[in-house]
Image (cartoon, rainbow, N blue to C red):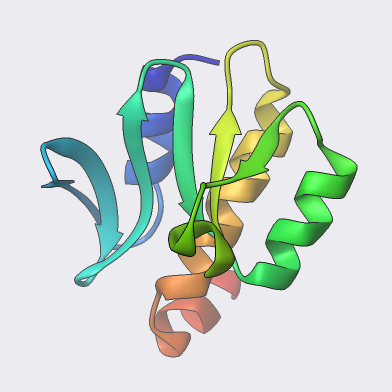
Length: 110
């Protein structure tokens, strides 16, 4: 996968838009960030702590908690170079659902 692939997936989520946070590209629904691209080959996704624990265990080379307090809140690094496209797409969808309004999530599932 490439950064362009991730950008296309993120912007394909309902009502997603691109913005910037601390000079880095991010992707939001409303004002809430669900993904950022802080450096080449790495994305950061907004997962819950439980989701993070699961993906770190099941995908140890793909995912790792962001260091410090952000990681404790569920922010998770995804090292996407050479990663399975469907797995990364699923993780981005999970991050989007975590921050999107419930009505929007429900509408996207129907």
